[in-house]
Length: 174
Length: 179
Figure 1 (cartoon, each protein chain N blue to C red):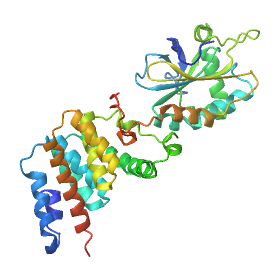
Figure 2 (cartoon, rainbow over the protein chains, first blue to last red):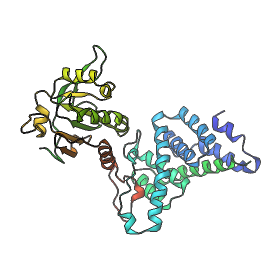
Figure 3 (cartoon, chains in turn red, brown):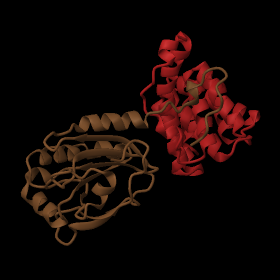
Figure 4 (tube, rainbow over the protein chains, first blue to last red):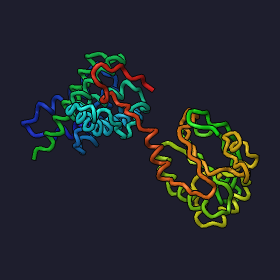
């Protein structure tokens, strides 16, 4: 049994939908490559802030994809946790006086990911979906689609992100 | 003197990298560590008063520079044996984590235009060089004025901090080119 399966078995009965979705988005045939699927899952799990889920997803991901892609996914989630807050503020307030100021925040990993740039953007999109920044989602969706990822693939990635967040919450049920 | 936007000259010099016997010297060249930033700083003379303070300060911050993908190189026109003797004799320099280069023939200081007109030694100059070999920051002070390593770090941070995230896009912006 995979680490995620073991964790899913702990989910309470009222959250059975989440349990079944978890198995399906991570194992059933889908449009994503293994790197896209597991990188997205890792980014979403880190963004969900449920440590046990993160540990389980990372453990399973390491069996499917290389460590560099796992690192990229962690980096995407960490930087998005920062950028979503920062740019969401700018987007919502919308004053040029803020938009004209340089952020002065390091985000260098975004342009030099260890693996594929477009996959990194996909992980960033998944993290932004979990963390809830409209403008960031729009921007990253545009980049991945322009980079050759199909809308079906984006959709499958978001299904993973949504399910991971559902599982993160369901695991917190006391 | 070379300045912002100029290419930092190629160099290959003897350097003191360790106090361990047999491992004291290595050649250090501009081609080492491709893809890294460089912080190259010069001092006028070994065994003088201001120098060890600021060299030690660069040493204490070496990890901060490494975390920013930057390699610190210290240079004077003294020869490598003088560097070694100074490092051995001064407690603040014993554990120096970066190489001390010897520009004995003043090739690098000459190419940079930082040979002091009357003293003939390197001026107290600091250069930040980007991974493409382009000078992005220069500071030079008179021979007796020390410098502030925190300021060099601050500038390096600022140079490395671009808003690279698509989150920064406004309506209608063109796609950013992937680096």
